[in-house]
Image 1 (cartoon, helix red, strand yellow):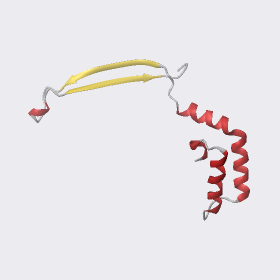
Image 2 (cartoon, helix red, strand yellow):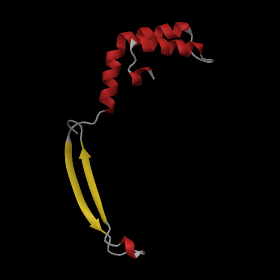
Image 3 (cartoon, helix red, strand yellow):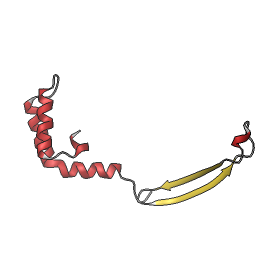
Image 4 (cartoon, one colour):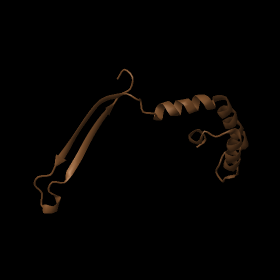
Length: 94
């Protein structure tokens, strides 16, 4: 939750306080350790999450076609166009 919201120090303090008050939550010592870790590593964690969730901007291949249905059980579905698009994305060197 902390990393996905990229919490600032005020948000972090409020979140951890709520977690310590919740039944079965964390202790105040654990909250202090989490806060210290987040303060020291926030930038690296945030960049790592962005790199893991971002698509590379490399389009390797694209194929497309439009199909028309020529024979179906119901006459109103004949000649209904269907577009099919295939995109192949690739990471650097892959």
